[in-house]
Structure formats: structure tokens, C-alpha cells
Image 1 (spheres, helix red, strand yellow):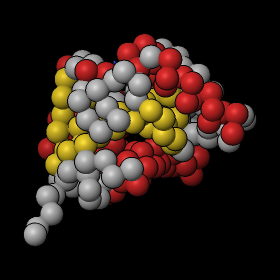
Image 2 (cartoon, protein in one colour; image 1 turned 90 degrees about the vertical axis):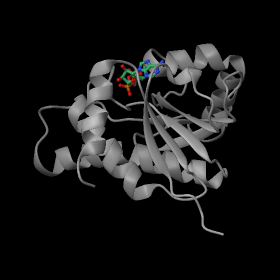
Image 3 (cartoon, rainbow, N blue to C red; image 1 turned 30 degrees about the horizontal axis):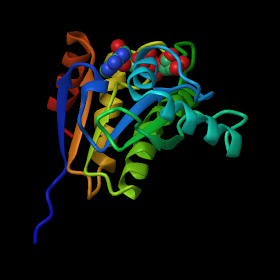
Length: 183
Ligand code: AR6
């Protein structure tokens, strides 16, 4: 039997409204919640999400989850089975050369690690926000290109439904451009 090819779709809206196996959170290294996507996920997911985050802190990440890494918790009351929490890099416009490339690589790592964990969980569908493009100030044009390129390269079965959920028209437009560009 032929396996379905992963498709990437763009959705304008709130990521916490998605019905998928995995919702990805743009978290911070404390794993204790914050604003933006993180705040929305904890609000809608409820206390079970925070309880799992606290357990992960106690067992492995007392010093914080490193940038570019990802961990899994329950999705609590969200319409999903799991939340994958990943920590994007803060954009630092003063960086150049190798240091700039290292930051970009950390952003790509967020998407790769999230896909890897989702694959290990047997997830078939996943919803990503535009990691780092809010509070962490990553420019949307570059953030969208990096997200689409990395997900195209790293998507594997059993994932076949990969969504980017964009909060506003500007973000949606940047992702449409990135998706339309040649791979
Ligand atoms: N659904 C989809 N996208 C959203 C939503 C939502 N409910 N809310 C915001 N966005 P951000 P970051 C968009 O700031 O830049 C938190 O405080 C938003 O417009 O959520 O990675 C964490 O605790 C932007 O395009 O994440 C960290 O401290 C994108 O999602 C820090 O922010 C990401 O914005 C992480 O910053």
C-alpha cells in the first residue's frame, strides 16, 4: 500500500482551536508559561499541561530547556493528544556570520525536534505556530522561510497533515510566499 505524502497547509487563526494529534508551543526555557501562543495553550489546555511541565522541570530541566530543544506533555483540555513545547531563539539583529547562522540553526532545530518527537509519538497531524516571530522578534519573512524549508526537509511518516497556524494576515502572507517559493 502506498503511504500518504505529508502535506503542508496554512491556516489563519488561533492554534488552540486546532484538532490535531500534536500542537506545538512556542515556549520559553522555564516551561512555566508566558504570553502569546504559550499563554493561550496553558489557558485552553488547563492545569494538566502546567503539571506535566513542572514534572519535566523537576526531572530534567531545572536549569531550563535549552533553545532549539523540545519536550512533550499532555494536551489537557485542548483538542489534541500532546503538546510539544519548544524554545525558539530570541532574534539578535546585531549578530553576523557564524553567530547569525547558529541562531538560524536553532530556529530550524525547533521545527526538526518537534517533528522528531511527533513522529516518535506516532502522530499523524501537527500544528505549528510561527516560532520566535512574536515576543522573540524574529522577522516574519525569514522565520517563515526557515519554517517551511525545515519542515519540508524533515517531515516523515506517519505525519501526513502538517499545519502552520498563523495569527494574522501578515504572518499568513509571509508563509504563503515561503510555501510558493521553489523548495
Ligand atoms: N495562535 C497562533 N499564533 C499565535 C497565537 C495563537 N493563539 N498567539 C500569538 N501567535 P509568541 P515567540 C503568533 O510571542 O516569539 C511567550 O511569552 C504571534 O503573532 O507566542 O516564540 C513565551 O513564554 C507570533 O507570530 O512566541 C516566550 O517567553 C507567533 O505566534 C516567548 O513568548 C509567535 O509569537 C516566545 O516568543
